[in-house]
Structure formats: structure tokens, C-alpha cells
Image (cartoon, rainbow, N blue to C red):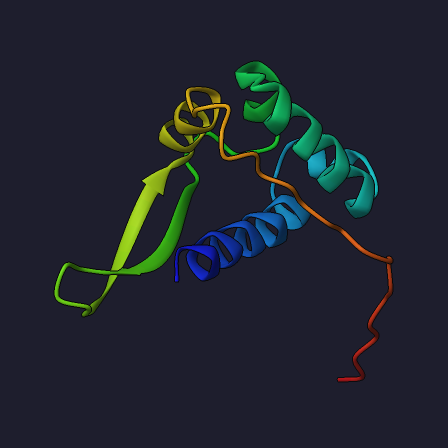
Amino acid sequence: MIFVRKFLLLSNLLFFLCFSNGRAQQTKPFETVVSFFEAFHQKDSSALATYFDKGAHLNFTTNDKDGNPQKRSMSIRDFISRVCNRAETPVWEERLGNLRWLYIKI
């Protein structure tokens, strides 16, 4: 369940990175994601901050101690602080896979 929560949080984060104000609009989305994770693994708070709007929040769900789902929110400032102060283990690894475009007709 922890993996699923981390996956969903990172998936939402990646989507946000591709459509946020800041660095994401200056480069191609795939390059943005790659350079974000480089800053992420280097624990570079200054570089990470350039990927987000200052007022942005991450919204996600988790389960309380009784297993009931609940919505939670975290400021980008708090997210960056947690990333930069996390322990060296476990090692987090992202696999971006092959880049494929999906075109949807509206």
C-alpha cells in the first residue's frame, strides 16, 4: 500500500510538473521530468523549487489508522523539505520507460 501511495503521489507530481508555471514550460516535458528527478536525488532544494509555483500544493489520499481513506494536502515547500531531508535508504528509483505520445480526438 505504501508503494501505491508513493506511485500515485509521484504520478500526480509528474503530471503537475508537465503543466505547471516555471521550468516545465521552458523545456520539453520528458526533459523536465528527467531534470526534476536529478535535482530530487541530489536533494537540491533550490533546483526543486524552480519546478513549482510557490503557492502549489500536492493533494493525495491515504488511509488513517483504522483503514479509512482520507484526503491530505502538502505544500510544495514542505514537500521539498521532506525530499531534501530524507534518509539515504531506502533508495528511490524511477523508471521512465519509453516516451510515447497519446493523441486524443475531441
